[in-house]
Structures are given as structure tokens and as C-alpha cells.
Amino acid sequence: MIEYSLQAFRACAEVNEIVLICPPQEVERARRLVAGGPADKTEKVVTGGDTRQQSVRNGLGEVRADTDIVVVHDAARPFASVGLIERCLQAAREHGAAIAALTCSDTVKYSQDARTIARTIAREGLFLAQTPQAFRYSVLMSAIERAGQEGLEATDEAGLVERTGRPVFLVPGSPENIKVTTPADLALAEAIALGRAGPASTGFGYDVHPFAAGRPLILGGVEFAGEVGLAGHSDADVVCHAVCDAALGCACAGDIGTHFPDSDPAWRGARSLDLLAAAAGIVRGLGFNIVHADATLVAEAPRIMPRAEAMRANIAGALGVAAENVSIKATTSEGLGFVGRREGIACFAVCTAYSVPQRGAREP
Image (cartoon, rainbow, N blue to C red):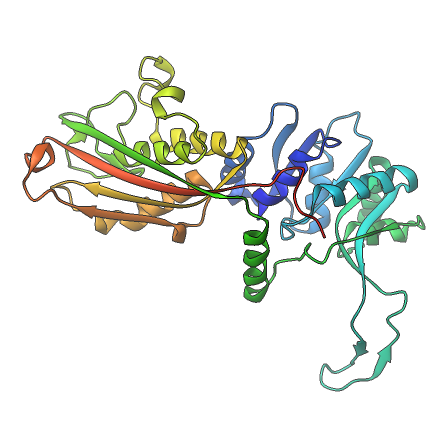
């Protein structure tokens, strides 16, 4: 979901800096997400606070000194379009504060006990707040500082600005700009994403390494203690190398040797998980979202499947996908060939990606 929002803000020509605010335990994953960002935009990761207000305050403290307009957007809303972002920015320039919002089309009932209706509320004049919410930097910072001094909390930034007496302008939102908070929301989001997605592409990868005494055996970022390792310029993780080529293949972006050649001393002894994360960043930078990876190891030894879950988690983290979208399988060669002679290990991999619509994305 974050990747969808990043694509929209990256495609907005008026945005020149993006700050991704996240919990401490997600910092490294967030850094991998911004690694593939465009050269013309500054992208950084900031650790959030205990509350939404504190998180936004932390983000405001990291923006450029000459920032005029800031936009706050919920990570739980992946489908804000470039056009919606631009309209909120324009309204903030004219009025100082603006939010995306939808008119309320349902009949609204009020209940004190959550069991019976106390009264019906006229829906005329009622709006459902969304994000993006855009403000002049000075307006939002002043509102947050004042709220901190008074010990006030609000569910969104517009609420803080309203308390200062400043009017907040309404920008027509989008029905597709949903907030994903429940499993049902997630199912709807998946349907919207498939409707917006460009063509699917598939990349294939293959790698093989011979055994080499005196080296650790690393497969899918997992060390198999006591086993003979593989020869290679990096840590020779045959699984990551095969998945790397498959990921790059989704975007027709060359292969692992093109981007991380074994003639470059910078990659000597490198963690192949880092190479895979960098390759995923390259693919994202070319406008593709990787959604699935499948790898099959061919080895007589060691036994792979007891460590498969850890391998899946490592590869998923490097690719920026959920672990359930990564498959690890293993087989032997039934004693045939170099694998059967226990001379090395091979791996086949396939990745699937969707191209991400950029500025021309469909908008209701």
C-alpha cells in the first residue's frame, strides 16, 4: 500500500520531497522502499512517535528549510491519484489549508448506546474527511505546537488547524481513495489495484555455484551452519542471485552481472540479500511492482525445507512483498549431473510484477 502512495507522489511534478514516517521496527524496510526513488526528489525515512500528531511533528522537523506547502497522507489510503494531490496543493496555496473530502450520501443515525437510534442527523453539509491534507508549513506547524501546549489530540491535521480558527478548504475527494482498516477493505483494495494495474510481466532467473571449502553456506539469507559453502564473489547465495535475475527480468532491466559485476571490488563478500533489495529498487524505479516470487533449489544436500520459512521471510523483506507471496521449494537431481555428483547447487526462480500507472492513471 505504501508503494502505491509513493508512486503517486513521485509522479506529481509539484512534489520535490517525500518523508516516509514509520515505527522503529519498520525503518529498514521503509528505507528499501525509498531506495528506488527518482533522482529529482529527496526521499527520507523518519521514525514516528507514540501518536499521529507526534509522528507528523517528527516528519515536519525533517523537511527542507524552504518548504512552503506540506501534504500529509495516510499510508492506509493507497489510491490517491496525482490529480487529487495536485488539487489539494493548489487549494492550500490559495487558502492556506485544504483537505480531500467526500459528501455524505448515506442517512446518518446517532445512538448513545450503540443499540438504538437516538436521532437522525441531516446529511446536508456533512463531509467524510480523507487524505491528502495540504497546508502551508507555518499553518500546520503552528497548529501542532499549539495543540501540544494545550494537551489536545485530534484524529487528523485539519482538526488541529480548525481549532486555531483558520478555515480549511474542502477539495472533492475520490470514492476509490479508501482507507484500508479491515479485511473487507483489503479485499476491495485488491479489486481496485487490479483494475488500475498495467500489464503483468514475468521474469526468469537461474544461477549455479560450485561448493568451496572454508566458506559459509548462505541460502536465501539463511546460514546453514556446518555445511560446505559456495564459491563466489559475494556471499554466493544462489537463491538470492536467481531471484535477483528474475526480478530484473520483469522490467527487462538486464541481469545481476550488469548491475553488480564480479569485477567490481565493491561487491566482494557482499550480502546477496542487499543485492536483491537493490535490484528490487531498480525494478520499482522503472515503474513495476513485484507481487510474487517462486524459487526452486536443486541440491543433494543440505535439507532445505526445514529452513524454508526463514528464507521466505528474508526474500520477501528484500523484495518488499509479503512472505506469503514468496515460495521456496527444493528438489534433488536424482544423482544426475553436477548436482547429483555433489559438486554444487543450482536454483531456478520466477518473479511476477505489474507495471504501475504513472501520471496518466485512471481517475474517477
